[in-house]
Length: 87
Image (cartoon, rainbow, N blue to C red):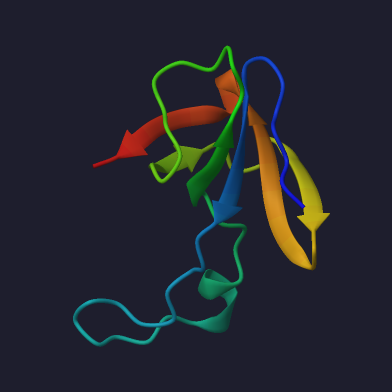
């Protein structure tokens, strides 16, 4: 099943939080269980400008609506929830 968001919305698959830093330091469980704020765009509404499928974005911590499609968790984000694109 595919989902096409309407208007100024995108669908994002949240990126998993890292358990270990680049330098090899393990993060405590509480830090790795925080709600993710980065994700990959999987669908873009026809009025949402500036992002495309495959872009990695930073979004508001408690923004968007969580949905489940075929057992996978996604977020539907409005334009105001997207803070920037990771390059």
